[in-house]
Amino acid sequence: MIHYRKRLYLVITISLATIMIMLFFDKKTNLPSVKNSLCRGIPTINTITPLKDNRTFIIAPYFDNRKNKMTRVISIVHHKDVKELYCWFCNSSSGEIYISKAEIYVHSDRFDFPYGATDLKCLEPKDWEPRFVSIHWSPKGDIDQLPLFEIRNRDPEDSLVEFTVCISTMFGEYNNVLQFVQSMEMYKILGVGRVVIYKNSCSPLMQKVLDYYIAEGIVEIIPWPIDSYLRVSSRWRYSVDPKDIGYYGQITALNDCIYRNMYRSRYLLLNDMDEIILPVKYPNWKTMMQNLQVQHPKAAVFIFENHIFPKTVFTLNDPFNISSWRTIPGVNILQHVLREPDRKHIVNPWKMIVDPKKVAQTSVHSVLQAYGNKVNVPIDVALVYHCRVPLQAKLPRESLINDTTLWRYNVTLVGKVSKVLQQIGL
Ligand SMILES: *[C@@H]1O[C@H](CO)[C@@H](O)[C@H](O)[C@H]1NC(C)=O
Ligand SMILES: *[C@@H]1O[C@H](CO)[C@@H](O)[C@H](O)[C@H]1NC(C)=O
Ligand SMILES: *[C@@H]1O[C@H](CO)[C@@H](O)[C@H](O)[C@H]1NC(C)=O
Ligand SMILES: *[C@@H]1O[C@H](CO)[C@@H](O)[C@H](O)[C@H]1NC(C)=O
Ligand SMILES: *[C@@H]1O[C@H](CO)[C@@H](O)[C@H](O)[C@H]1NC(C)=O
Image 1: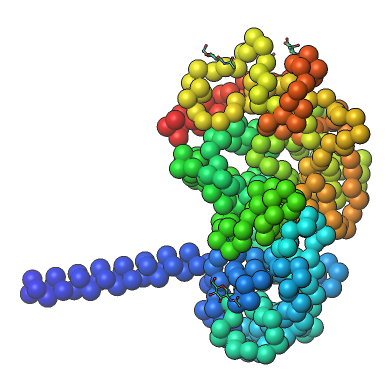
Image 2: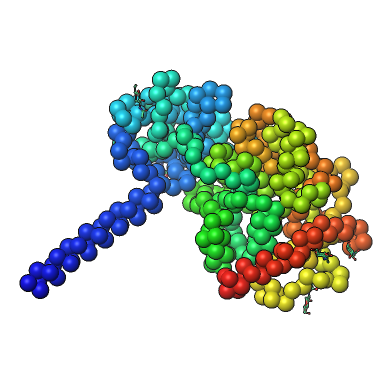
């Protein structure tokens, strides 16, 4: 009797465990609809999927009917070697395949690297709505061997936030913890709803910080193992560092961020982790954008001037040299409120706030294709606070401009940052 019961418990335990494992993997692969579909192929789970030609890397396909009824596949291709690609659309209820030749559109901002951000534009079948697509270099082949992608944005239903910051590529064992936490807390003060980070690599300590913000529900990580497939440059131009692709594939990540968040966020901010689009005339992004949008109802792209606050120059009589922060690796931005003046004959680069529904293709400092106007926001309204190594290192301190806009948030910022560091246990 006891034996029998033991065995029964064992059976129940194993069944439960199996169910749990199945549920877990179901969640993890995030491809629930493949199961009930007649579409064949190899379901993809990674952010970057190489095709067999080793010259084409698929990020993700997105439904886009703003001009034609098409699927736009965000990808990376070798600009010379890849001449022909096909979308194999699959009807998940009948298994029918519709093959459509892709228009291969390599973005103009490639900066001479052989690989670049690319849109594969495929017209969809007229009378049905494909949910899955495979990409192949030929209209012939064995579908079972091709990677199968779910087409995103077909029926958008995710929660809408007002502002999302897209951080393209965290790399190089990133460990600038203090500046990261300060940027995050500033974004939150200014109104961020979500921060999407394309992560290549970071330090273990930084991972702890990321885990904190993931648990908080603010940060979303998109794995970005681009260096597993291509030789990446940490510079933006081929001539300075001749590799396969520029800046860890930053432009591709930004374009993916646009489409991934098109229906999840009213606005996207495209800036780096060491940059804050800082309102001068308004207390936060919401009031700023409400005012700017009223003044420019047709605008899709708002560009902000980038200004360098050298991390090598500290303020005198420093009120924010906070003792509990001194052991944390990274820059304390409150100590850097002196900014470099404009240079003659050199235009400051920009960073942007965009309405993603009106953007087709983006680069880093400008949008390449949009359904709407561009607005240059003057620096008495807002600027990009960018704390990094100086561009004009030889300038004496007296030539720098005392710009304490950031200090308006000092009380709130210091409180929030200290609380986060304490909760993480730093
Ligand atoms: C692609 O790369 C893999 C792994 O490096 C290699 O085995 C394969 O032969 C390559 N295929 C082509 C078509 O170059
Ligand atoms: C499959 O095709 C049929 C007719 O061709 C269409 O009515 C149906 O909506 C399609 N289903 C899917 C899931 O695409
Ligand atoms: C901050 O304070 C510590 C301790 O007083 C001092 O050693 C350090 O030089 C200060 N840093 C700056 C940038 O003023
Ligand atoms: C910079 O401005 C702040 C407040 O506007 C002031 O307290 C500080 O003394 C100024 N610093 C310098 C170096 O001029
Ligand atoms: C810090 O912020 C408060 C307002 O919250 C302001 O009164 C104070 O002047 C700021 N401190 C500095 C050094 O700017």
